Length: 294
Image 1 (cartoon, rainbow, N blue to C red):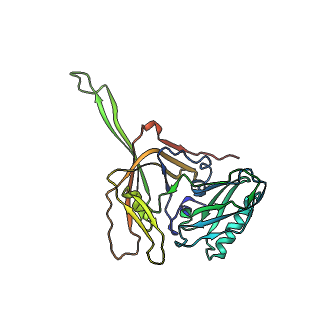
Image 2: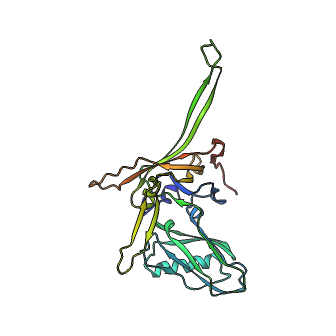
Image 3: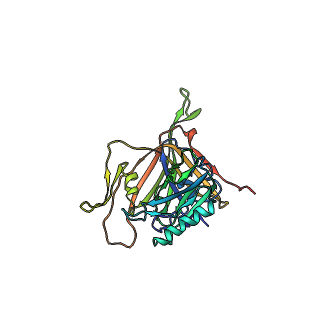
């Protein structure tokens, strides 16, 4: 399956590249390089530690699931196979009316990686209840380090912008050398406005979520900041071998002149965003995969 059919928000095909964002300096996923699979970037790690008996459950909120609604699995055995964990998640989504959503589960007990596939599935929040486990230890669930940047109809652009300075000898017309005085590696795109997340990154703002109550509307609120946020940013695309090409900036700022046109049009409204490096160029990684393991 090509990358253009995998990385989408609300069912939108995004072309041949997908962007991901994390806290500054976050390393790349260890198992990202063999397949175009959003789950390796956005999976939760569930670890039942040294449990020797009992069960646990997984719960899902956010993303396409309305605020105030939680989808919870049936009890899962402490030593369940990855296939059994997947079956429990898929059954829970199907019973709740979300049959288009399935789980990607990898690993073996005591540690699994869990992600949700489907439109907006990467924004689903996963939590766990371990109170029915026995045998000691401290079970944990760890959130993903990376987040998809959102969908775009117009594709991504990466640019390496350099400024140079000539080295001259007095009275000689031609320079004897040339130095790079500064260099910036940039990712830019117009992201869909169908997620507040797109606006958050474009405006370098913070987001807070207010759950709905009987007297208060549910809301997502953006707080504009006079400071630029700093991120690690990665762009995954396809190369001439139809294998992953990965571009990674460990330290970048996000900024764009955000203009939104409110018009009657069939296409989705788009929000421009640009991420520019603020690290030494030697820290930027461009990796081309030419073959996969046999």
